[in-house]
Amino acid sequence: MPKAYVNNISIEYETIGEPSSKPLLLIAGLGSQLLAWSDAFCEELARNGFFVIRFDNRDVGLSTKFEEAGIPDMMEISAAYTRGEKPMIPYTLEDMADDAIGVLDHLNIEKTHICGASMGGMIAQIIAYRYSSRVLSLAVIMSTTGNPNLPPSKPEIMMQFFAPVPSERDAYINEMVKRDSLIIGTFPYDEKQSREYRTKEYDRCYYPEGITRQLAAMAIPGNIKPYITAISAPTIVIHGREDPFNLIEAGKDIAASIPKAELLIIEGMGHSFPRDVMPQIIEALVVNSNKSSVI
Image 1 (cartoon, one colour):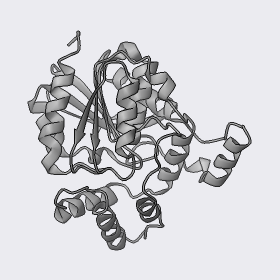
Image 2: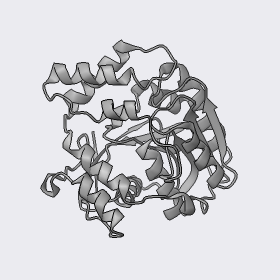
Image 3: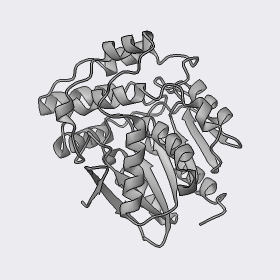
């Protein structure tokens, strides 16, 4: 796969579809490689008229790792906020937004449609208000504004997902397959699909250290709700009714804050992309992109 050299780091990316089609930048969530956007999903988007760009965020997959920064002390980050201080962290979500823009610059793409999921949805929102002239349309999936007044994630899910994970290959895959079953929502759980994905993920790049640094980056923007009111691009907010991480109120909060944003609530969907919801999400992306005045 090709690399883009941006912000003094290397970002691994891949494109699917015809360059003459509408560009669509996909931004993955916490600790997720570009594999989180499945081949089938990207190929179907390409068949629907998009030139799809997916990439590894910094500190994950085959992009630059920040090993020299060490592992952030999340307790100290929280304590610094309590003291009214700005915590010292390796990088911010704004830096990650700049990386995404750098990928577009590398590809000579001036304007693009953007879709982000979970943490990637936060990055997408930041791009949409910091680089408004670059954004044709915005899709935010199972994400949040970081509004402290939102209900918290379900504690039983958080405890299981952020518990230590074994590093040995088979044990890691088995554990992640088990955890995936907890966030599917009420859709049938495809264990085979999950196992295939987690196996590809491990074999391509097993690197758990980056997840903590990305978590620290998520802590810095805090509440971006006041900023997203400036977003003018056509926006679709897609959220699962059964999301245990970012509860449905988080999706509603985004949609209520961005002018003229539409909210698509998918019944039964949790914090994942089961095959059953793919056609609905792709249709929403197509319809929203067609609202843009510039193609």
